Length: 234
Image (cartoon, one colour):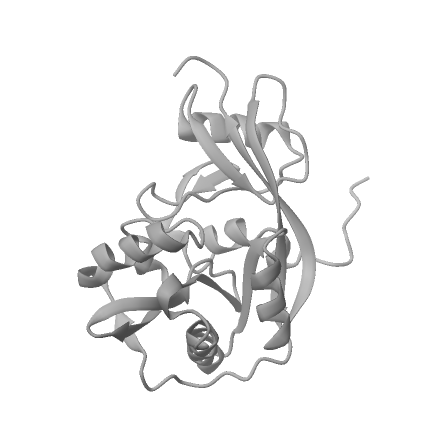
């Protein structure tokens, strides 16, 4: 007898899969039960069900023998043959009381701004940002003297939700509330579409967690991620 769960899975329980099989399907590189973004867009890979060994087999076929790949939301150990190279913990927050509003000084960032965006990310390390990440959604920035000093934008896009990501400020311009203004502005655009903002941060990033909770985000769940090597020689 087949048992049917009375509650369908929440999109944020497996957000990369929900995005790659939903609003971001145009980006998806997929083999059966595994999918990923193009390598110059985002490092995220996803499974339909991480507890299914067949999904790991599909991921191995997708990434190739001996390849390194990150796995977000990794709550189970990989099957025999996979090597865990690195493991970490994160935290997922959802908007419950954020005051979303435009930032008049913010400018829309696009492909022509990518070199500056990559430079800012390299100096501030907010998380993965690649040459085509800007294609995932709206990115806003603040300039000082013509130089990009802060930015934030949209990344994962499960149905009904949009992740705020790449929130970063040049060290010389911190303490002015730039990150908060950009998060509020990006959230305003998300809310205009009838969606709800959410975000992720490293579990040990106390400053980011303190900021997000202070402006109206609430912890939804703890997360995990792995960097794994697929079976076989590279």
